[in-house]
Amino acid sequence: MPSIRKIQKVMKSRPTLEGAGVHLRRAFGFHDENAFDPFLLLDDFRSDDPRKYLPGFPWHPHRGIETITYMLYGSAEHGDSLGNKGVIGPGDVQWMTAGSGIIHQEMPKGDPEGRMGGFQLWANLPARMKMMDPRYRDIGSDSIPEVELYGTKIKVVAGRVGDVRGPVTDIVIDPEYLDVRMPPNSTFDHPNPPGHTVLAYLYKGKALFEEDITVPSENVILFGDGASVRFRTGDLPASFLLISGKPLKEPVAWGGPIVMNTQAELEQAFTELRSGKFIRSGNDPNL
Image 1 (spheres, rainbow, N blue to C red):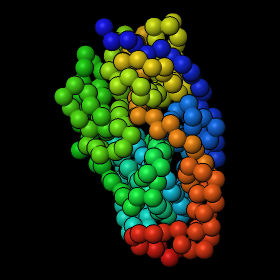
Image 2: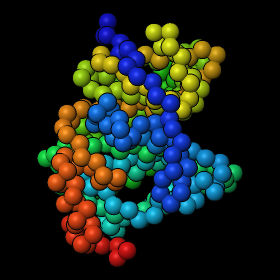
Image 3: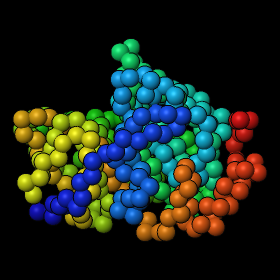
């Protein structure tokens, strides 16, 4: 029987202000990158108060990373220096590879009840691909398959559940990104490649584990090494993101929205940003 990963760490997400004044919860971020390698940051931006999300995330740069935005409800308007414009809504995913440099904006909007919610994950790029050409993918909810196993429903954005593969492929860190929704009194087992970083973010209900640990919502779980993970539920259901990827094991030089490998590379990026030489491909949005 494959070895089941044990819990290495449980962290409560922390209230944070970002963008032009968006209230969100940060599951992990700037001081946790080594533990979650190749992932850098995970934000939970759910709210039913428009004052807490309408300020949005006006034009800002990225280099050296990928940003993955997954919407639960509401929508987000986006635009970038490649000329991409559009809106992602419930169940949609925006997978943006910043590479050598991109400038974009994300402006959230509520649904008819005023709710807006989703998650943004930052994935690091390896040194050899930090300066690749930027690319952008919109993945509509209708192209994301859903698998049901013994009452548990799994939306497969990236990776595989059984014979079902998600639509996002050709990513260097070999990621898996699943939205798992378990009914009460159920068990969910899922294999992972040994050596990969595996984490889960509980966003609703609570999950139980073999170590007699109960984890409530708004907590992130980092698992130790092994070949699979096991989740159980009691009287309450549980909904969570299950994310994994191949660690890069490279140095990280982090300055806000830009992540490089050395301080010199980081300083060069900000020098280019100030001098107007940051965008190396695509269109300049003339901000």
